[in-house]
Length: 228
Image 1 (cartoon, helix red, strand yellow):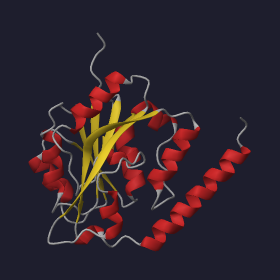
Image 2 (cartoon, one colour):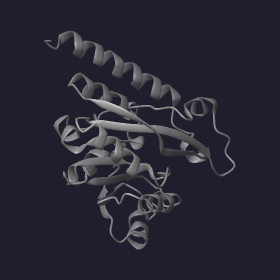
Image 3 (cartoon, rainbow, N blue to C red):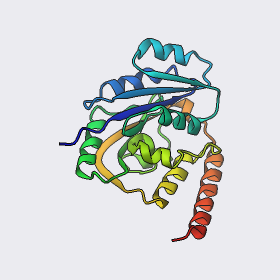
Image 4 (tube, rainbow, N blue to C red):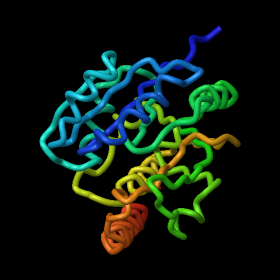
């Protein structure tokens, strides 16, 4: 019998002391235990690192200058030693059966490189979920890495997310992985609870659209110039 897959939970965070406790509690509550918890503090000024040390003694805490989420995720992936990477933004949570459902999916499709489930969108702090996010409720979106597990070896081989991007970096990495032959699988289970609040409404829609267009253009150019 093969050994159970090992899992690293990587939490990038910037000034997230107000929400990180719920995220870490959701990792602790996983029915399939997570082997590593790596919190990457991306230049916080609100005492995030000290707070995490108090509430989650087993976590590895890495502190960086402010570089953005792509850098933070890549640093966490390089620090991990587990077979699979699971990412969780500091203001979201994982449902308790999340990891066990994904691991069960891996055992059924052992050749898979990325496996993902459904999103659940929740409002908090009296926030109303906006139409764009409400439309994503219940969807399976393969490039939403916090809803997935991805093989660490593939992430490292691809050199992770493009650190020059400050939006759409997840889409860009997913497309690069697919071009390299990534095999994906989906499961019919909620694997991420995305929590909308006033603090995560401010990301520029124009920036997201511009980055997404640039990503799609770069992908098209790469596919035209890469020998088949």
